[in-house]
Image (cartoon, rainbow, N blue to C red):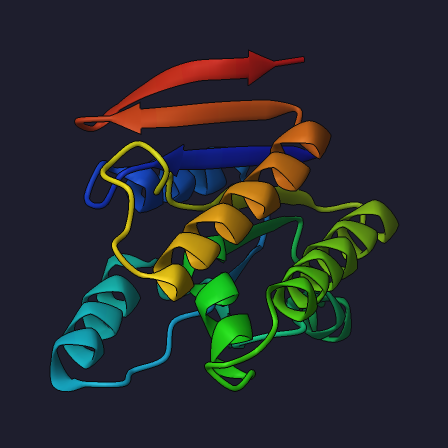
Length: 180
């Protein structure tokens, strides 16, 4: 499998499944982390994720332009985990003024995902991509949150279209959505 996409809600077991799949690959692993430690609680979450990863895995912490960053840092990795697209899209949002035009943000998100897909196409590695499914709940009350939800949904669709496998995590159980 070239691309495995794992989606689901918060705390559904997405990262755990990604790590299990990477361990089974028997390849050197590059773990691409997109989170930024903006507060103490997030710092604790990031640290817990670091401790959960095998010490032999390479880690690349990057907030945007991950396709280019992976290309430059993949080394001998045969498996790449990206955890996660949800925070990547948030990081793209953070690079723009909060009054940024929706079309500009949509273009920036599409460019970020296209850069990632181009990187994947040029690589021989297996990619395991983690993302959240945020469109199943209530409709967000404000315009920016609705735009974020919509653009993350579009990014997820772009990735799912190219993925060989797509899993939806429900209460720690992977449900096969797509399998080529």
